[in-house]
Image (tube, rainbow, N blue to C red; front, top):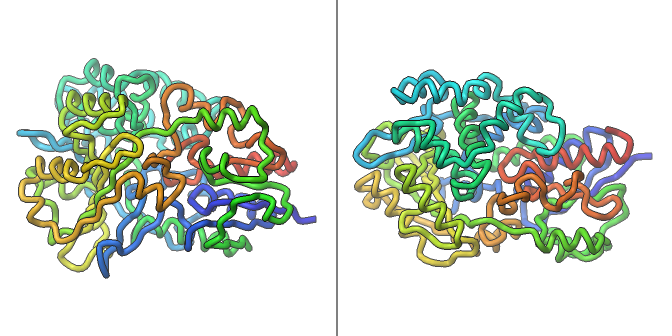
Length: 474
């Protein structure tokens, strides 16, 4: 008798779950609220005909090395990764940009007196990036696949990023490179475990890179859809599931939803205790997204910055740490941390000839609806005088608009929930079975479960593994 599974939500995690279950012989049906699959990993021509704009994530250090994506062989289904000359740049006032090279030795040598410490900090993980990802892209409360490597990472990850950077490094360049990567946590840089983000993102950039998907992030979804369709998975779009009782009986139901949407869903039969945990789940800061169409490259003061895939705009460690500390208090700095991607520099298909699509967002308080778009432009202009003169199109998407577009992005939170405190390791509830949803046959596979946000599919991959274990097929 064929086992059946239903997945609610066709983001990268939902599709990865569907792929693993179909691979194990289950009949899988996916229901998606939107008119096409992808969740927050979609692309569209929102800046005009001939443009490709990533509506959610843009650069993919976790995607290129994702154990799920590698197992599924997405490159055999049309996915192509494109790398910039530099994975990341961090401009500084009155100084050259700090550059992350796709090579540990080259990066370290450019950091001068900090070279030796930079090497020692990153070398174990640049040497074994895929094993590092196998360790960190699953529940942290488990025996990791590579225990000694994980112990080495844990010894570095424990520390707060800002004090660690001040202690370890003497140059502003090294401190800025490290702090910009640590800021991906969307936590104040004085919090424990933020150093882990600095080490991890830096190590991935200096090994497997921070590539973009040719043709836009939606190309990752296209490859996943081709894979699951070939395996017989049914995908129903424009299918708004509000009550699980409207679905046919199945051996397992997997929810690619965050706690707020799960609580609003009827017919889940989750326990009162589990529901209480979901009500106490907290969401993190939001993203205020601004996309630009330019008549040419950004005129960076340091011209090398134009060849970087991702650019961190936050100034020095002190300035960046101050902005993120204010954010942790629910306030927005006049100089917020801005993440910027230049996909057109590696992928000319993103814009008409001679033009460039620029993707950016600022860290803002959850649900913020103020004029953060002007602050984003000011941060870019600060390091690229004349930037505003190159703008021929601009689209601002504040946090509430992000949530309207994708309900999983609550208040603009792109990570599926805050990483503060125990919620970093025990999400979405304090349990050692994070993918079980408090009712028989019901599972959670969204970014609100380990390992959290990002286009890597690993939450869905692990949730599918939990289903298969329960069905005796693990």
